[in-house]
Image (cartoon, rainbow, N blue to C red; front, side):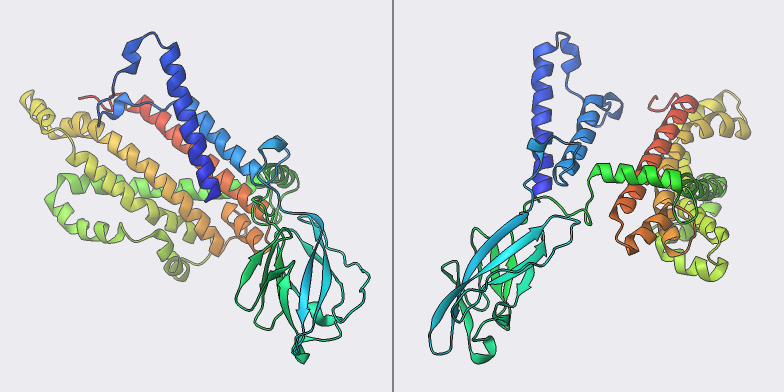
Length: 421
C-alpha cells in the first residue's frame, strides 16, 4: 500500500509540474486544444511522461530495497540493525515479581546472527541474550534460565513497564511484543519499509546476476540461448497460428456457411486459457518442442481468426459498392478492398496474440523444459533466487515490448492508411 501511495503521489506531482510548465512556456495555443473524446488519432504518447514513469518505478524499487544506485536520502526507512534490549517483569504464582533484561542483537539482511553471552544477574528472573535477523520475529523462551519457570506457574506480566497478557500485543521503543499460547515472548524489532533481498533484491543485484549468467550461463546454457529458445518457440507458434487463423477468419467473414460451421468452435476455444490446455498437450504430444509449439499455435490461432473475421466484417460497404460500380471482379475486390481494409484489425490481433504467446511459453517452460526463460524462472524460484526470477521477468517484458514496437513500425509501413476513411 505504501509503494502504491508513493507511485500515485509521484504521478500526480509530475502531471501537475508538466501542466504548469506547459502553460508557462507554450506560445502556440493550438497545441493546447481539447482532444475530442474517441479520436484516438489525436492522442499521442507523451515521451516525457514515459521517461518519468520508468524512472519512478526504478526510484521506488531502489528506495524500498536500499539500492546503492539511489541517493541515501531517498531510501525508505530501513529495518533496525544493531543491539537493543527490553525488560520483562516475571510474576510467580504467589504474586512475587522480579525484572530481567533481554539483550537482543539484530543482524542485517544476509548476515548470520551470532549468539553471545551476558551476565545473568541476580533474582529469580535472569537476564537473557538473543540473536536474530532484521525484519524477522523471534520467540524468546525467557524462563530457560530463570529460577521459576512457566511450569511452576510463572508468567510475563509486563514488558518495559507496559502490562501484557495472552492475546494482547504491545509496542514499545524496542519493538512489537506478544505472548504465545504457552506464555513465551514473541518479539519483532522495528521492520522499517525496506524489503528483504530474498523477497525483492535491489536493481544492482539483478543487473550483476544478468551479467554473470550472460557470461557463465545457467543450467548448461547461456542467457542468450535461454532467451533464443523462448523466442523461437513464440515465433514458430505465432506464425503457424497466423497462417491458419487469418484464412479461417477471412472465410468466416465472407461466407455464412464457413461462419456457421466454425463459429461454435472458435467462440468455444476463445475464452479457454491456453494454460488449461497444457496437460492435454503433454498427454498428446509429450514434453518436447512439438508440444510447446502446438500449445503456442493454439494460443494464437483463435485470436488471429477473430481479428481477421472482424477486419473483413468491418470493411465499409460503400467501398465495396464503389468497386463493383467500377467493374471490379470479386478477386479484385478481395485484393484491393477487403484485404487492405482488414489489415489494421489483423495487426492489432497479431500484437495481442504475440503477447498471449509470450505468457504461454513461459508457463509451458515452467512445466517441462531444459532451456528457456520460463525454465530459468521456475528453477530459480525453487532455490529462492529472486534476482534470477526478476531478471527473467524483466527480460521477457523488454523483449515482448520490443516485439510490439517492431510490429507497430511494420504496421506503419505496410498499413499507412490506418485510421483514414
